Length: 82
Image (cartoon, rainbow, N blue to C red; front, side, top):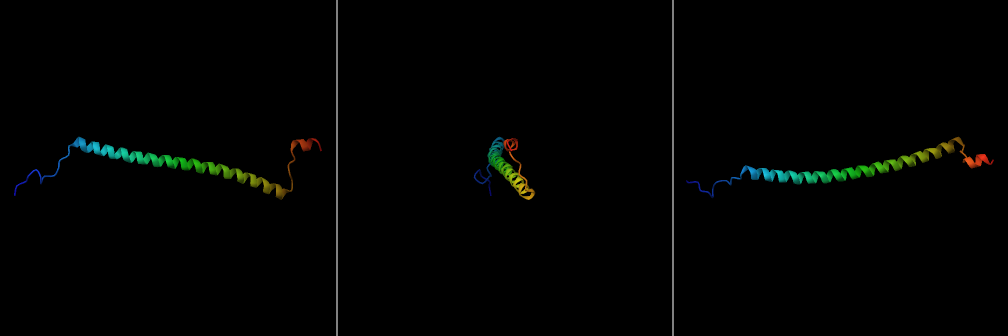
């Protein structure tokens, strides 16, 4: 049995293998960068929501304290003209 060129495995030069590997890594990096960008955007949205909710919580806390203490802070002009 003789080995012909047809039966032999295709030999790919090392530089071509490296070029393919680099291209694959570039594609994977592009995908990873896109995911990271979307994650950063989501984190920013969540931080904004947290700030908003903290503001609402502080306002509600102030209202509850006002109800429980029965005191209401009068504006400066009402205190001045009483």
